[in-house]
Structures are given as structure tokens and as C-alpha cells.
Amino acid sequence: MLKRIGVVGIVINEPKAIVDKVNLIISNYSYLITGRMGIPKHEEHVGVIALIVEGNTDEVGALTGKLGNLPGVIVKSALTAKKLINKGDVSSD
Image 1 (cartoon, rainbow, N blue to C red):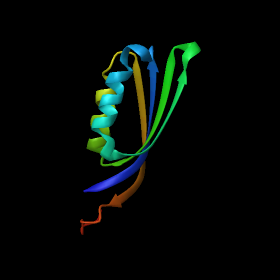
Image 2: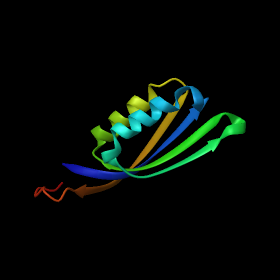
Image 3: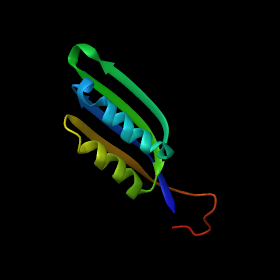
């Protein structure tokens, strides 16, 4: 299956109320994530997380969809047009 490299940006309003659910979803998709950076903005009651991901569009879409369905969570993603071929795959696109 072809994979793409991309970035997922997550903004969490009132993170204390929902951060456990956000972290659980991110943990469930950890196989897609090659990097994570989180910045808490306590005085603004906002948290920001940036994820570097590698996966196919369905996998990344499932991750962002689950995160985006949480109340107070805003998610944006950008995937490169470059396609990566898994080591076991012989076909290319």
C-alpha cells in the first residue's frame, strides 16, 4: 500500500476536559506517527499538538476524523503528493 508523509495540526480548546481522549486516539494511531510536538498554552486554556505522520490517506483520515469529532478539538492535515512504497510492496503508482 502506498503511504504519504504529512503533518497533522491539532488545537484543543479547554484541554483539561478532553486531553485524555485526544491522547488515547493518538496512542491508538501511534504506528502512523513519526514525530510529535505539543505546546500547552495554559493562560489561554489551549493546547497545540503537531504530528508528523506516514500513512495512506485512509489511515490519516481515520485519525483526523476521530480527533475532529471530539468537542473543542480542531484538526487540519496536509499530506505530500510524494508516495512512499512500503518495503514489502513491489507495485508502484
